[in-house]
Image 1 (cartoon, protein in one colour):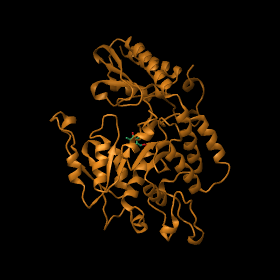
Image 2: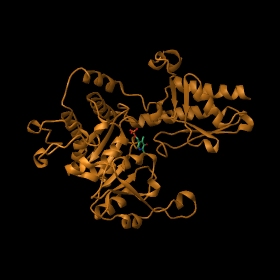
Image 3: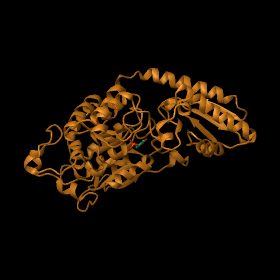
Image 4: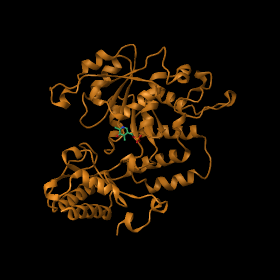
Length: 409
Ligand SMILES: *Cc1c(COP(=O)(O)O)cnc(C)c1O
């Protein structure tokens, strides 16, 4: 029957419960299924040596080609990409500043963000040494007023202390990126865009650069299905150079230091920077090769066919769960909050004998663990995302949920 049940996974072999993933690409349960092409390439990468900066230079050209940006860089995840982007905005090409970070005494260190764009991930900006200045109110979100964060509020918040504007891309984020980018550029500061989970559609690889992002960050471990610990940054050549200088291992003898010209202009620097703030987020040759190959495969994939398959799976799961007394189900549109359509299951505990929260707890605690979406538990709703489920796993999840309800009622 199900892979997670019948075939012993490496996790079970190690004595660790495996997970059946019905909640999509979530880092805490391992992200996505890495592509087999990427794994094969990583295995070969581990067999021999390469200068990491050469590999980053090649990755840079490929990322530039697929995003339309001037240059690109591979990081150890989108979150590391945000930290390095902030470090690049703070230090630029100034080696002294690179050395100081996360200390920022004496130079601009503020990142202006619409308040509605604040997330737990922006800790990465602060870890680079930035201070976040958020502007506007949450009125629209709270229903206390109709006004969203307004462009003028962003405009007025940018001062001599501003190093960058931070922006989180979602299909519904406001104000539009073009508007925010124009304001930032009028003040001569870059815009850093967190688009970690905004793939597919593949067109988004070029879209945010076109709309004015100076640096845009994507996760390599979500729908690209590269190694979990990868992310890509695309953007302005000078900022990517700063990222490279603050990330690559810098224990190089000055007289023989000759990094790839397309990534680093060493003549103009005149010295070798020290190990930078990004050194603790290193990327190995295996991950670099893995993400290069995965990105290529992502571009060749038939995303329309994937979307149809997710829709079909979600519809089937919704139908099957609707047969359980006390469940009300419907399917969301893809590209709403998540990139795939999701099954929304409203649980009526008076009929099921078990609340959505109790159900989720029971599913988490069994072996293999079953993970469903929990973002709407406070409304008595659990969600199922088909992205990381094969047919048998989907059937298994429906079976386990039904069994729990049956034994409770
Ligand atoms: C997933 C995500 C991240 C982090 O991505 P990693 O590749 O896991 O580091 C950052 N920002 C947003 C909005 C995300 O969804």
